[in-house]
Amino acid sequence: MTILLESILQTERLKYPTHLSEDELFEYYCADNILVNYDLDSDEIESGLIDGQRDAGIDAAYVFVNAQSLAEDFSFDTVRQPVELELYLIQSKNQYSFKEGPVDKLASSLPLLLDHTKKSADLEPLFKKEVVSVCRDFLDAMGRLADKFPKISIRLFYCCKGSEPNETIKAKAVALETTLKGMQFQNAQFTFLGAQNLYERSGIQKLFVGKLSTASTPLSGSDSFVALSKLRDYVQFITDDGGSLITRIFEANVRAYQGEVEVNREIASSLQEPTAGLDFWWLNNGVTIVADEVSYIKNQLVIKNPLIVNGLQTSHEIHAYASKLPTDDERSILIRVVVEQDPIRRDQIIRATNRQTSIGSSSFRATEQVHREIEDYLLTLGYFYDRRKNAYKRQGKPADKIISIDRLAQAILSVLLQEPHTARARPTSAIKIDADYKRIFSGDKAEQPLEMYGNAIHMLSHIERHFKSMSSEVSRIFRNNLKFHALMVLGWALNESTNLPALRIAQLDPMRITNQQVERVIDWVFNEFDAAGAEDKTAKDKAFTRRLKENWSVDITIS
Image 1 (cartoon, rainbow, N blue to C red):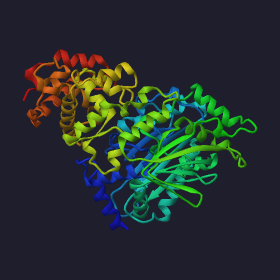
Image 2: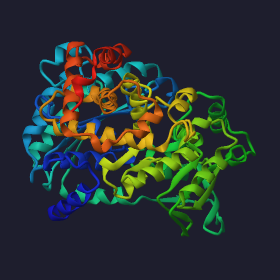
Image 3: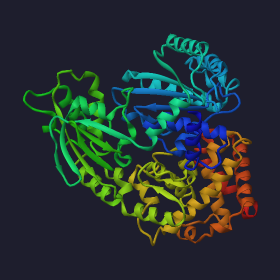
């Protein structure tokens, strides 16, 4: 089985970042494998890889709230009960057997890292800052969500290319679970994944086939079905074995849960307080799913790569109600399944089926013409614009060449609007406000030529390649904080001026960029950051951007 796993790893390497060593490749693969249901993109996976000196035995760490990654600009205001808070800690050892050392290391470090009475300043002399930070984020989220009584889970994984751990290692894992439960983390679970487990799980990455039981024979048309499904069967369709929502089956463009809004309160009320003689589907628009293929076999719709494009709010409310769903509840939900792989037609379905819901226009930005044009243009440059999150990842395209909407927005914020501090501080929410969005994606090609986006991405790629080449040499606090500041300064250096409007960006020649120039830009930005205090908050402050502009001159960073 190890041979098969090695083959999978080398195949997966083609779609992973190019800079990965063999050990890093295994770490990346394990995180991607374990977190497949959370639909993380390459940047999100890389952000959790924290292996290194003083790593407390943790190679990767992630925090999720209701299956959503806890980014720095995560909005706790939209979180409503029931709440699930999860901490994933992954050990990925590119070795052919399980060993006691990794478990011992975790057992000695976690009680300290998860002690809420400890302060970061007490722990950072013992553990690297990234390890302390993720554990503090988890504990902070516990506090902020306390009034919502979250279900708290700690999921520990030890992955290697071996078969089974021996009884001593298993016993130590059980002892660690017991220790964590004694710290009030009752839902702590330690899982070992060897070559067999990892290989079998790899199939989930490539293809997802959902099976949805129907209450009766569905109506069928040309590549489409309309059916009723019992609420309990729909819950089973949208959740994994652990009872969590399968995030990746929800269309990324409309997957943002709206929280405590009137429409959701009405859905919740109709679930919790049913009216005699009224079925749930009579009171609800139901769910629309697009898929690659669908068939009806033995009272089940078998759906290949389902994507729920309408019904997110309904699905969240049904999932929230699932634990209270009586076993004799016979209510149903209306399901529409359409086979459609053409991206333009999918966009039409998304807009049409959501037109009468409370979801704002910002949720449909990726379906707008400007983004289709950017996607087509970037393809000519060898980049894959991920309008639909992870669509290109699932096609096996190289991670280094995939550009998300958020990442492109951060690049334009930095180069055109000269707000790298905003790009750093608001990685997932910088374009949620319409006014901010229009500054970046006006849709007017005379005002913002497509070449502007292409040149910004070319420059960002140069910066990112250099950052990755120095990953073993430079503290992560510099690399995490300064990518977009360095991008802004590279634009100045290439332009030989800080005056850089959209039309001028479109005229820049990225072929003039040299490795020496990029190195000089990054070294200068690093030095300025160090002089300004070298803290996370520094990079998020517009005062640091202002400092860069005041101190920069053309002779400093021109090659």
